[in-house]
Length: 250
Image 1 (cartoon, rainbow, N blue to C red):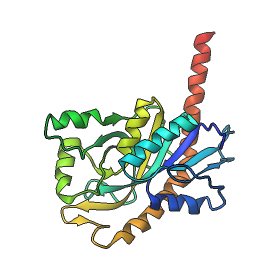
Image 2: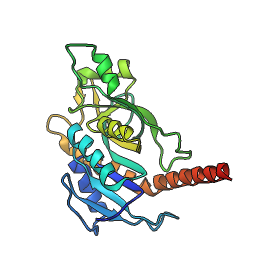
Image 3: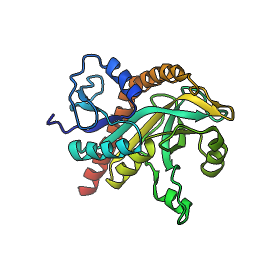
Image 4: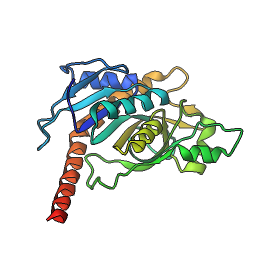
């Protein structure tokens, strides 16, 4: 696939990718060392002449980090957009609300030979979302997202709220944001809440995984429906940057 797109849409979990595959039922699928990918032309977005690449990077920090680097090395996109799901903290956010991620913290680092906070800070990433002007394509909550290779533990919620001000968590965002930042590649992360976790446990835990699957479909359809609007936001920003550069050169 000799394409140099401006945008790559990175999808992590298998359940999320299944929804994408159903949404673009006629897509021409291509394999990669990670997961499938396919190009899609958004004719509804004015000025977008190149296809957008949808790419299944895989779940968990290892796959997320490696596939993000693969994305950058292969396609050199101007913007990586990660669409996906997350677990919300009961009482802090509602089911199916969307988080526009401004900061990620990889919190499951357990250091016993030094300062654990120092090591967590090393893998904390600030995302530049200043280019996104309001109104947004869909309602979002600007917030930090905690990431770890684990589902949220009910006993961890009070600490994550107190220490980081977190309202939701996932498995991959921290790795995606960190790798993109190291490569100086813009990254937009939008995650919808599929299930809530509180003091008594999680809505999708203990054999109720169907709750997660049902809400994953609803959340992903909402994000995919809104995607042309986010693409247009970036194109408007990029156009303004080009104009400013042209003015300074004259």
